[in-house]
Image (cartoon, rainbow, N blue to C red; front, side, top):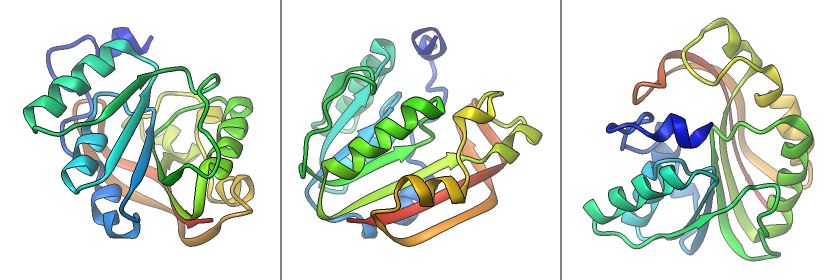
Length: 194
């Protein structure tokens, strides 16, 4: 499905970083950053340009090829890994930060991935996450049509209960990211550390 979605000339989610990430990049400690469900590379390229050592995991080979092209255009080095998050080994106490921007996972897989993230973060490592809230189904401006792929503030708080939150909120905001995320949206945002 994602190979087909990304198989376009243009970048369907744009080439500039997610604004929540860009606005809060100073909350991310310098070092090794893992970006999950990276897609076409916009967030990984942004982080690499800020001086982070970025590893980007993506399940779509088409997405990775576009991301590599974007990285080359910006003259940055990123390690791209083609893997399904269900199988990917996040490691333990490995990452200074994990970035999850609009990573739509079914609830059963999401819980497992979130457990892997907590284990994978170093002490004082940071999680930065933005996801669609189920209210997004009323907006139709991106995120698909399954509430199971979306998250609430309560759910994020529960699934990352061992982390300390410096920011956790649900809000409406304009999300203008390419052709597939455009317009007023209902999101949940989190910044938390181990």
